[in-house]
Image (cartoon, rainbow, N blue to C red; front, side, top):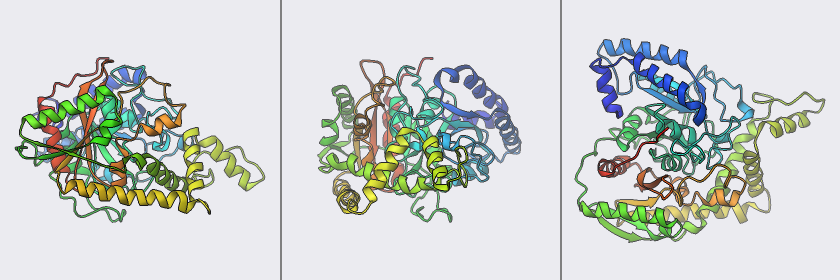
Length: 477
């Protein structure tokens, strides 16, 4: 069932919130040992949430997500529930406050099943940098889920939650959604508050949604969007009703396809994306060839900007105020150094070092400032494309999900795999990924629809139309 169907089933008492929640908890207990999509499962509090939601349902006052069991990525603060960022540094951290999005979900009386696995501090493209061991792809448990929201995507694909919240810094919702055969939405920067999201790269991070359909992503976004006094980067331009355009006639819609994205993808991914373009053409859309010349510099710019911001954001984790603390020494600096050395994994250390290097005297102009110029150029090129296109279609990832251990030891391969997703975060645009085909290995292939700033309604509607006519295969566990 999609979320709207679950809402109806709950409202007409076809099933109770407690029964629905227990079904998900039972499935997590049975299957998640092999998938490892959750870091923390909350059976007792989930049932309490369900009982509370049922009283609201019985009173006839249920909101859209009342009684709906969701999972939350483990870098989003949840009061009284561990929020680890999949890191030894925060292995035992329990926040005393809720993130803005959690406040919104609680106001709607949702059910939280637990916190999902991820790359440590959201740094990675496979979710295998997790201190708790990486999640596995439900379509083939020998393959990665993608990252950093890999646990969220795996949980949705395996039916271990109705939908999930993730975070997207350079494709971290869309790429795992593509690898796991589900739908992932990254809203426009500023649409959803980052208050309570443990920061990786503040100018790029955005909370997003992983679900079984484009409609469901908009359905959840309707609850979590909005301006927040605690986050000055949130915008009042967000209007809500994100499913409002679903079902609209797409005839005459102009869809741009930048050739650079296709050139960098494998043959089967390229063919699947072009087949999706042919589908849109068959229903009356206009396909427009276009170009994003600066794409070749995008990955370099992204990793310089994100690592510089990560170096700054993660400087607060020193083992003194909170977080992992090494064995006490008589030297204060040594204690901090040891705590960070023990608390952070290799990928996090690599990005902290890269970020500090890019920001240090003598290299700032050569690296960080040049990356900022590329960001400005990419925004300009996207603006030029949107003068003649309504949306843009690209592959979500250049390949399907690869074998666990195949690329994680090679940073160059890992970083360049983000080529299809990072420009959206750099430019602050919205994008949604859905399945558009399957590779020779049976793994899902994802395509992305990119939209103009704050035009989530259109990309959700465009994606929704494709999904209605596409025969998506479910993961078999």
